[in-house]
Length: 99
Image (cartoon, one colour):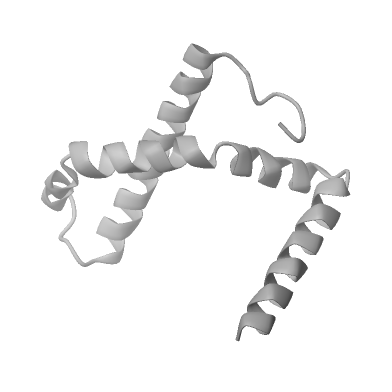
């Protein structure tokens, strides 16, 4: 099990290095998302505890596709706006590749 874990870790690192070396628009966007992962995690933690998402049941009943999609879209917009706000407040410290 340990040997398999080590091989899997090595393979993941090797693939990551190969992908990072590629000059591609899609790879650049994936890298940008990766650089903002901690901001996204913090924003999700904040919105999950502070925003009362249960008021959405007025619009759509809970446990329905409409409710799930509406909640997903609203939470994504909230996190996106928080990340924009943080980037404006903190400057653009993640501008270049490999930072």
